[in-house]
Amino acid sequence: MYSICMQDRETWTTGSLVWHLALRWRAGVDRAIAHLGLTHAQYSVLASLHGLVSVGERPSQRELATHTGLQRIYISKLVRALEKGGFVVSERDDRDGRAVRLDLSDEGGRVIVLAKGIVRELDAENTRVLTEAGGRELAELHRALGALLDATEAGDE
Image (cartoon, rainbow, N blue to C red):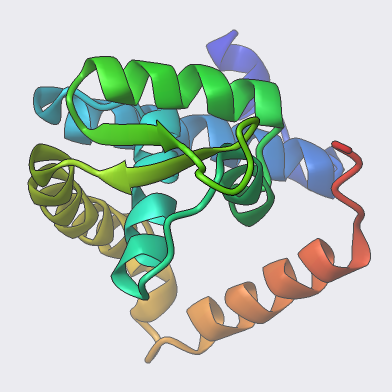
């Protein structure tokens, strides 16, 4: 498997490069935050929830799925695991009995602040090669990835 990754990457499609990078990035985040009791997927949900809660929202699982870009069934499983871990609390919406509103527990708030710092440091380390020339390459990468995201459809509905 390693020899496949070492072949001439110039022949790879953009999708293949993004896929391999995403796998490595996720594995790196998994290793960096494992001691906090989180996986990369759980971190993504908890960080998104933290952002929403910090502006006064208590999203439903459906709203959180839309915000994260993850499928609702996956959000449901991740939220259950985060609740079991003591990071998230949920309660039925008074206005819609089918909806569940989410919030961070005190522990979830504490842990996500730590995890965000760790992930920011890892991001800086992973992109250091692109910032050595003053950051122009990193800014260009951000623009290019944003354009690719805008040009593709999520297709998860």
